[in-house]
Length: 192
Image 1 (tube, rainbow, N blue to C red):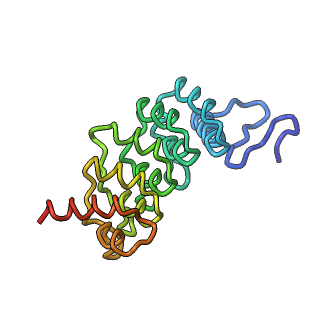
Image 2 (image 1 turned 90 degrees about the vertical axis):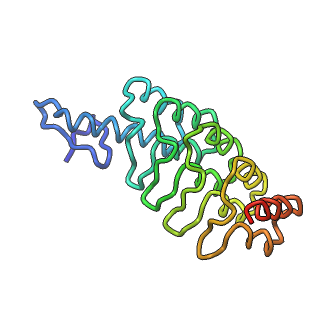
């Protein structure tokens, strides 16, 4: 049971009436509040918390998402850039092996994709647990503008889930524009 004047949040350990919270309880409360802000889309509040405690850039939610994932989910390229520059790992994988770049491709966020592609050390061809890459997801979902940006940066056209490479997707998808099909075909010829 909690004190009626103290707001209770799930996951928070309530201190005894005359005791201060332990360091672990206080840290847990800060992290819980941080993820509450992120989940609610209050990215500016989360950024303010990171400014006060840089260790939050490595904090993970229950699903393995960091602050960078939430910025991408809310299609907030400036917040994504801020979080990455403050130390969020652009190659971090969530519990399903999804990276921020793969999520940006799935979400159709060209702004976030362009921000992430500015980082020289980003692994553009990471495959999630299903074998999908940012490029194969973008092409399968019809996000041609994102597929184009990824291919221009050098994404592999030979990787994809369950044998569906971007080459096959370009050949069979009615959503893929002709110029994108031509770009895939040109890249494929260059590799042979």
